[in-house]
Image 1 (cartoon, one colour):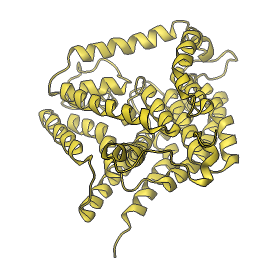
Image 2 (cartoon, rainbow, N blue to C red):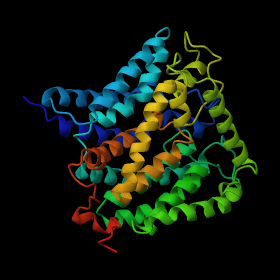
Image 3 (cartoon, one colour):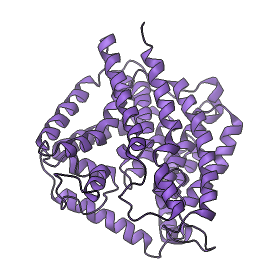
Length: 419
């Protein structure tokens, strides 16, 4: 019997999203019960946490089988193999701690998955993902409302004496905001149902507001602005964004209900960590895997063989994690890719590509996206989708990267023809 690898991979992606409420269930219950003692010590059973890793590894395995069976690849094969070889070398240098090496491999796996699921992602899968996310974000808002009244005050209280920063399915509120913004993106661009889009437009801002996440509020505003501007006026985001930043940043503590020095403390702490990591950057890293949330959790839980002085705190930045885990060689590789991606973004004139790039770029400053489930899966899917539809065609010259606009989704796009 020949297994349909494409269909199986798509089902795994959908299952990975549907299981989102389960993978942090223990942490959410602990928030209700008030039994938490530390943010880095998980309350969810390990076997539930492992589900997400098993699904991501299974996706990668299916991609490998697809490559072996078809023997076909694309122009990304060479950079993929270079990064793979570099990663193996970095992991080998960290082999004095196998646990550490595994943490690093777990961290970078979504990058490889994006290449490996290249042939599995198309408009139909994006639509299926959008439908699932539309339902999940509504369920999350319902849970947030319950948390508002019944959750312990681990994150403090709001002006009404209710629980502040309610995180929905997740332990960290900003992760819930990230999930809601990602849902808004997928539903707006890939869900043909007007009703689901309308409901999502109402639900997402409320869900993000309940998280009191500064990045979430900024990302929501950026997404809404880009959609309203459309493809012809998208360049206005630069002056509008600069003006809005000057007005909104001082008001973020008021909008989010957090301390008056919230922006200075949050931004200053991240900048300090980033500077410290950059100051100790190596040509080829010898501590691959240390700058990950997994390593922080292992150290907090007494992980054997790990240097307890390696990471002072959670890094919470994709960019800092790339510098710390991959060294100068890895930074150069990702810098080259980001520059070429920017060229494609500018030339492609695809609003969905602009918005996706904006979301993941913004959250790269305040989250390690590669470890933020299920957004790491969504990152792999989006990357594979645009690599297939815009990036590879652009550099190969086989076709012009035009707006992909199925008839059922025509209203969800802003193109020159529809204006």
